[in-house]
Amino acid sequence: MKSKIRLAYLVSHPIQYQAPLLRRIAQEPDIDLTVFFGSDFSVRGYKDEGFGGVGVKWDVPLLEGYRHEFLPALRDNAKATVLSPLSYGIVSRLRGAKGEAAFDALWVHGYSTANAMHGMLAAKSLGIPVLLRAESWLRDRERNGPRLAAKKLFFKMLKEMVDGILPIGTLNAEYWRHYLGDDFPLFLMPYAVNNDYFQQRGREAQAGRAALLQELNLDPSRPVILFASKLQTRKRCSDLVEAYKNLSPGPGMEPHPYLVIVGDGEERAALESQAAASGFSGIRFCGFRNQSELPRFFDIATVFVLPSRHEPWGLIVNEVMNAGRAVIVSDDVGCQPDLVTEGVEGCIFRVGDVAALTDALRKVLATPDTAKLMGQRGLERIQTWSYEEDIRGLRCALAEVTHKIPA
Image 1 (cartoon, rainbow, N blue to C red):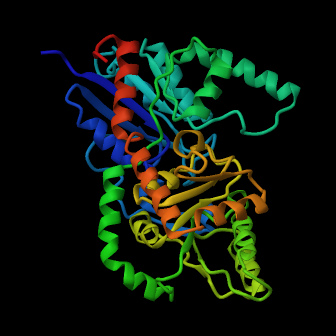
Image 2: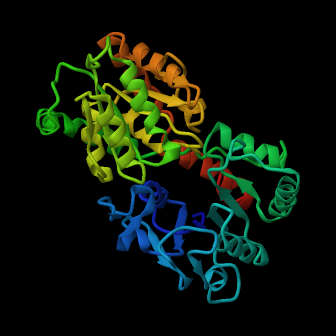
Image 3: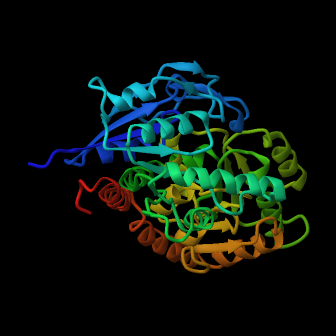
């Protein structure tokens, strides 16, 4: 019998989107997974500045179904930054009690933190191959000459520390090819959500649809435009409010759809003022809702809109597509090239272009069947962007860097 491959995973803290994937990997009969966290702040509960300081404690299991350990902390300010969490002990964990490598490979999430760099250096010193997964893309931000030169120098060093990259999608793969070269090993491990979970929750939500419509005082005969994310400037919910106002058929006349805004954050007061100034009664603010609650809102939606600037992926789009709903995203949302084709699963518009967003809304809401068909196509497409593709990508990467698992 072939021995299991011993895989260590180093990440800052338990992340609600990753926990189901880790459970799925742990089910592989020939992969022995151990997860090392730098902090437990997401388990304890914390105040998320992105949600306007709202106390957040996720209502989905973050630690069940896989082996894990919290590394001792030198610094932990309950947020993920370059220097926090800062932990020690990864060297001894990777080395093991016998003084030799205790793992066949180390998978690291992100490369821009002290913990991540420490882990990669420790692995290389022990001869353990390193796999890296991160969200970066080339649209990150403008850089001047000196900063760009420093970045290229950094990636020259990083290239010597990493044995394989696990891109999350098309734009992320472009980023890695740009900095590491076309010949560097890439193994697609797409940013996916637990499709089965969200589809099941979506089916369950149907029974409570009437109750939620009544709670929000929504007429079931009118379409619903949904936004669900942090109310931050870069999410550009204000553009959606403006586009919604443009749907008015005439001066002082209410738009036919509703606009439902789920989330909280620093922009909420400004958005509520913007909505109040419109004089329209069809806008609802629902505040922060935990992950298990979101399928209820997907269920009442006709179309979901994410108008963000600099959105590295946008996993909320995956979730909504599992509910069979049409989606509209800006061209600055990272998942767009992989999940949304113009006019097929929804629409794409140029970020910040309110007129183009208005046109996209009109296109999707042209008839009830238009949005419904787009949603059905989205559900079909998301079936091929799942944890099973993640497992295939990970297995290929492990086979390449360890020569122990057949791809």
